[in-house]
Length: 116
Length: 112
Image (cartoon, rainbow over all chains, first blue to last red; front, side, top):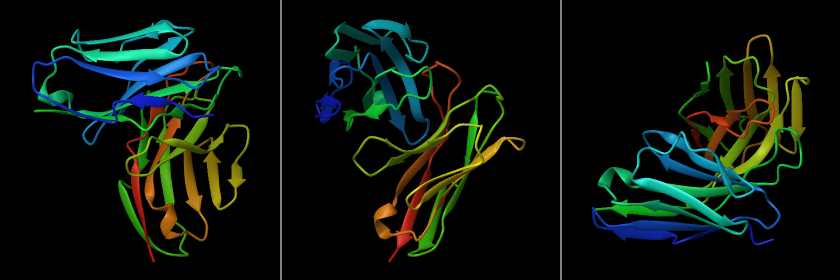
């Protein structure tokens, strides 16, 4: 399996611009997660989906952030307008949910976002 | 009560030594405790995990020790190698809740 695929790997954008991060989860996985990682705040869960439906978006920092999952093989995380404090590594991850608990979460390699 | 406290923040060990990373939690409802390993430029990857019904789990050179009464668990790396240099995260979750509560991470450096 190719694993979780994220794009772009690196993005540098100017403050105020729209940023769209993309993710293809592992085939057959029915849970998808978006995480943000920074030195100051560590790993933060932004939102997760089950069977393409958002289950918990309480980690989304503010209305500038939105996430969609139009089908089982694709998700986007959008930031509009972007701000310098959004600079971070954004990880997409997926999981199979085939056990009642403790399912392994598989991470992509991340999208490194710099907002200048 | 939802926090997982991880220590130390960073650790330097000579090759062959046994680095130990500790985590503590408050929520007794947690029933799954994984450790993830993250190399620079990569996403975290599951290394080993334990449930509270056992006190120890070994996978190769990696061992989790679990102390339910103290609400603590730790990762030991036997015969550590420079290739083990990475950031290690402990985490916890309860039941079918997919919201892993993450520790802050430990940056481990193994010196040749």
